[in-house]
Length: 434
Ligand code: 5CA
Image (cartoon, rainbow, N blue to C red):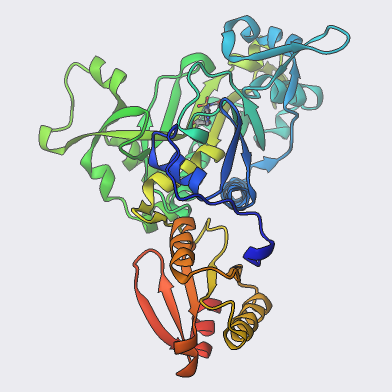
């Protein structure tokens, strides 16, 4: 993509209304634009990152055996009356009539709808177990939308729902999602701490939240320092034993921790940090299947309400969490897995025909090799270009200037380490296409 043809409104000034660094950087780097309180447009660069995060979440859901579908954002009030949650949900739910006066709402979550869909077609134990998921926009009329997309009113969520015949089945489905979450966050370059959670309005018995440690996190959590020693490789190869080990280590939200009479962790190993909740999973058994009349025939001819769980990931919130975890004083440092482009190609002298012809040629070669490249072909000062590239945080910067070209070299900069290296053009391309 040529910057002279792109839509990338970056700014130097730190926006006054943004309190945390991820929100400031998202506005400055031209990723998002607020259109109403807690509601954001995703500008081209931000939309690319959102799609990459979504794709990693999707791949790990698929890998865990979950099946993707897409449910609508708009739901009917009657559906929610069946579970008894319509009145219970309160002012966070955005409610409105359609032209006929039918009461509608913008979905804050989808337990009722998936149960209704399941109910219409599943009658037998042979159709279980199943886990279905979608990645869809939600609306919650938060009292205090803040920190940009971190606590928005409209936000993108992956929500999965599992249906099992019995409690052992539910436990297996819950663990499969637990593994998927550990792998998802590891692939996003994040270290997530699983915290045992109270179940709240979703209901149920077993629940975990996944927190990314960051000073700006909204939750205070207490946990065993041993949770910090889990390696990325271990998370990527997580299995039931990993979960057993992780969940045996102490981790609680402040409110729950305060209720614990005697903390099992010795003081020197107890950590108190702030966390961003990026995922939340619940095993709630028959709460919705019973209230909404979903039952299936078992092998011996009796009828049972399926055991259910629901599993949420804050897809849009993850972008904020990634930036909180990965930035420096110059800007964002994207992990390779979600970077909007892999390479930022910088033409140092767009007013020099020789340099421009060389940079154009490199751009074509990168494109032909399938390397996502943002090409700064603007006629601007080098300093401004460097600052812009550092701000938007692409993993690699490839710099083409007149002095280097005379000696047959280009400069390759690694955004994360700051290391710069002069290389022949061939070696630079080989490095980037590897
Ligand atoms: N039905 C369940 C699981 S599918 C559910 O809705 N869980 S939740 O309320 O915990 O939301 C799931 C995830 O969505 C949260 O862990 C959080 O990462 C994200 N989320 C929730 N509210 C917001 C919000 N206002 N802005 C951005 N992300 C949010």
